[in-house]
Image 1 (cartoon, rainbow, N blue to C red):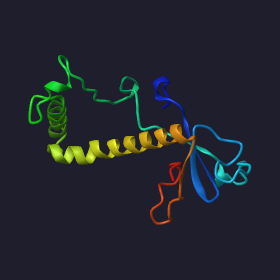
Image 2: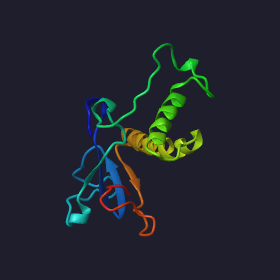
Image 3: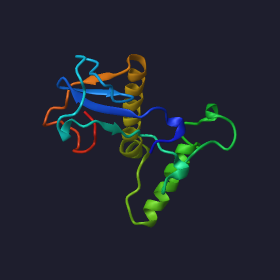
Image 4: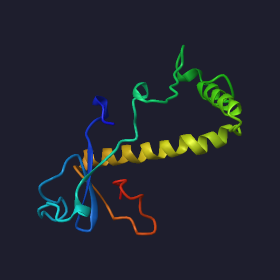
Length: 152
């Protein structure tokens, strides 16, 4: 989902046996200067979906923010929004007869993967802003991304 605050759309295209990321499809390859026009469907440019969403527009979200004060009042072990959210989720899991999650399990399973994805996207976005494009080697067949993901 692209929303106004999100910034520019990232496009990935393949050229010079590399994956090239930019904010638009250039007429010429930034590496070799040749025409970028796609010759085959596999070479067609794809947009990279951003990992951020507007929680108010999502079908199912759990949004947290302090009702008073700032993040400076955060207490790591209890009485914080993270503990509250986890307690709520565990109540739902218990009602459904599912095993509850401890703090580490929840973080590893739900928070870390989304944080990694967001971090990679931000790093890519900033690199394109700085240089106008970003280049990577294509993935090897054994470690490649899921088909249709648009990621190199």
